[in-house]
Image 1 (cartoon, rainbow, N blue to C red):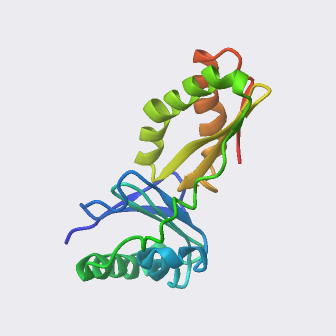
Image 2: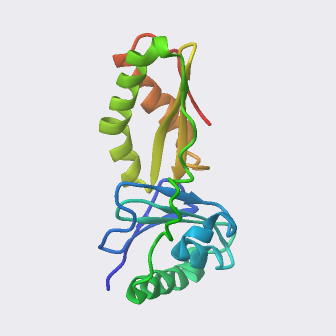
Image 3: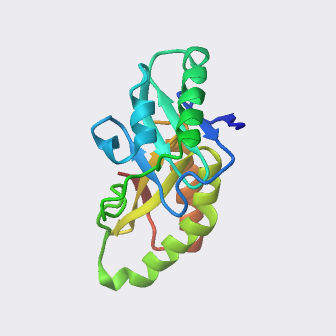
Length: 186
């Protein structure tokens, strides 16, 4: 099994691509072992000293470190990912629940057309680009001209995430939807 490793704009996060599906059509972001109980893979990775986050997506795993060096952590992470996939254990143990990363969206029904356009732009233009950098971004709400987004994976805590949010996503949404005044991360 070959696992490709790619750096992300967040120096504390690496993207691991195992060459097979990880979590098709879903994402999960784990920041501690307790939250990772539903994912044997995420739990294994969070047990490694120096790992502070695991983000699972369609075809990759983004791992965030604390203060340890990547040259110390990378071989251990690669070993754990390889062992997991070779064991044929599930990525997620299903308990009949939807993704824990899904929070209740909020917006006024009068803004339904604006929200539909925002979601479409995020799905088609923003999410694919953010996924290339090891993260994900989803619509959370819209209120009084402000769009609220949920940033996950490498995007959460990335030094360049504010620039991406303000200069990239905010400008894109303002261009297509004049009612938008600003974009904020939740």
